Image (cartoon, rainbow, N blue to C red; front, side, top):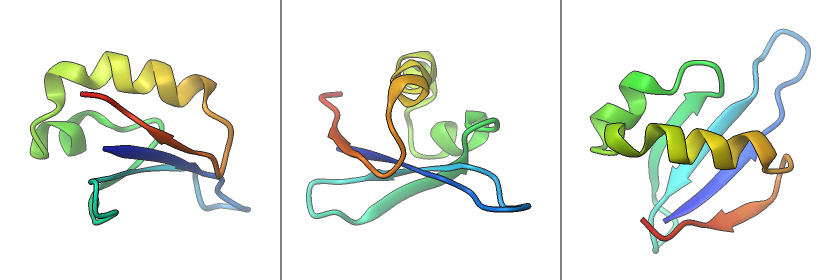
Length: 67
C-alpha cells in the first residue's frame, strides 16, 4: 500500500491518498477527518499509525506502507 499527502490550495484542504500495489485509489480523505474513510477500507484499527506517518510525511512524497 502507498500513501501520498496532497497540499491543498486556497480554500481546498490538505488530503491523503491511499493506493494499492497497482496504484489504484483505495481511500481519499482530508488530513483532519480520516476516521470514517479508514473504517470504510478496513483500516480503522490502524488509523493512529497511519496518521502519525501522515503528520511527518512531506507533501507530494509517495511512501510505501507495510500494513
